[in-house]
Length: 313
Image (cartoon, rainbow, N blue to C red; front, top):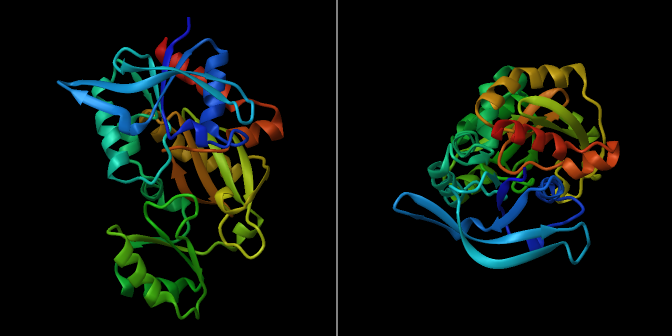
């Protein structure tokens, strides 16, 4: 029997249909007979304890320039749908956090993927700190003296905003870079949150591995190789995806974090591993499904739906 599935995401007309993971999941859901709806995060309304959204029924096709059709706008009672896919992209700001509070009102009648409470409590660069033994040396601070001391100890460092995404605001500083003090000032003047500072991992030059976990289990991986002269391995800034296998160290990392992810209802998660170190746990809007399927011919979207359907049934 098909389920009613509401997708909370950014404007669907703007997605890259050759890479978007939400599209891959939605197409698989449609193929399985589920009825899809689309709404934007700002279309949510909470009234007298009841959560609704101005939504459109949705039909999808993998056709460039003509990948979706909407039905007429309607007010969708989100307590009556079976699944909500929470798939809007960061930034992880108060608007994002507010949607997690609103979506709590339809649980457990409606299955929200990923669980909004866990998403709110698990920002990518903070959840990872629960596993310090798996991480490179890291500090989270606003204190310039602490950053200076950290660089003196580790020489090469990476500084990045705590709630950044897509490689934005990530800086690599060597031991003699004179911009450290100015950069710390800029971070503190631009963001209210502290910054994350990590020991630079030169292994990033051969790739930042994205490992996809489904219901707490390692499902597959791709490698993202930064372009020449670039320290960031995000595909948003030109990194190239290539096939990747799971190593024993990768499986060790996944085994360590998997039980927590499963318990918290984080069904679709993407972690970043550089040189055998865990650097981020992405729970908001992970990517990599389409690249993995092109390399392997295996649909991880199907596995995601198997996990969702098992919970519903």
